[in-house]
Length: 217
Ligand SMILES: C[S@@+](CC[C@H](N)C(=O)[O-])C[C@H]1O[C@@H](n2cnc3c(N)ncnc32)[C@H](O)[C@@H]1O
Image 1 (cartoon, helix red, strand yellow):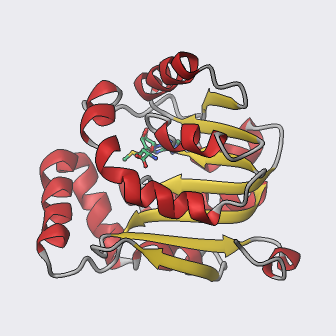
Image 2: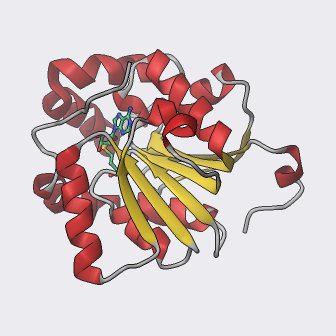
């Protein structure tokens, strides 16, 4: 059945004001793993901030999300900056091959997998692998470090995620985070990085064997 949408109370301006500014280091790690001139799909693109930064170094970027409020925010940011090589679309991460009529060099996703239950998470990773040669996946590190930043992550997920998202986050942690999801989908991690606080984990995986011979920058 087609997904008709997902919306959180903080989607749009609130996310853009409060969360985007603290994700600079996370976005930079993702940008470092995406080769210049690539075609890129950003899955669960949120406010489009990463997609806009990718567009500056890539041939073309498509952002998909299930929140119409996030997508409206994306369109405003894109138009304000006059970016031409970037499209946003309403789309379900589990149906990428059906909903998008093209494939990509790289599919990225940031902070979306921990908000999904296991079926949706694994279907998303498989759907990304079906439409792209290389995956760049970023999300909360598992386990979080026993430090103040690590505690803040748990606290934010509990307080802001609430009854809907916190149980999904807990299951994401118990099932091994990004590495657990890749293993479940039969994919092997290629490269990995963490930010300086150890709270964000970025993992790449190749979906084509010949891409493994073409090292990342
Ligand atoms: C926490 S936000 C992360 C946004 C952005 N990628 C970032 O790094 O800041 C998660 C986003 O994933 C989107 N999302 C969740 N499930 C999705 C799905 N099945 N298909 C497409 N987007 C989805 C949500 O609407 C939300 O915008």
